[in-house]
Length: 216
Ligand code: CO
Image 1: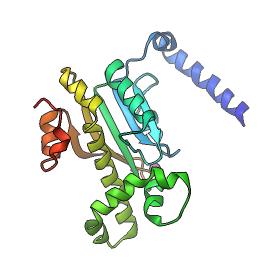
Image 2: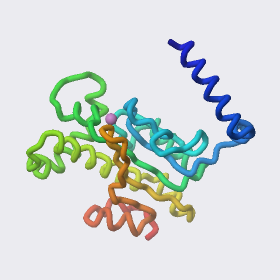
Image 3: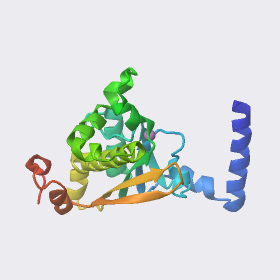
Image 4: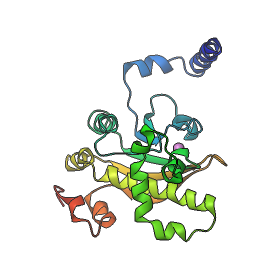
């Protein structure tokens, strides 16, 4: 019931004020989050809670299957605002194992609008189909596709003109790929970080278009 939520909220706000009387007045003045979180809308993957951050510390964008489509105005608005205005230092592209969106993308059922939204995951699947088919265990195969999707989205963010503009301005901005497990609550780094055009070159050794416009 909504009444319960409002009661929860009052208790939470009182707890916060008790711990730090200036907490809300400080936040009301401005937000200066260091991180941009791009994650799945899945209710089991709440950004702040997982990484132990308070309100004001992470700017959050969530959608089904944590995608960063280069023509999605919602994602682009978030990315531009985060890089140009908030000047976040780290972009955390965070996928999760057991992602229903990733599963649905390759399950073959028709669900409607979401089938269009999930197309980028089918592209990732096609690109890695041999490696994926070599994984016999179904859960392990799906987990691998979740990881590959994160890596693809990291590449999408690293290729984004807003990110390039930030680097050209000399702004510190690093894009990371992370994956969360809903099975044990653990977040892992996928060992991919892109902090400038040199990293971008390494990430795209055979895709010259990725560096068009880059001042390397
Ligand atoms: Co998901």
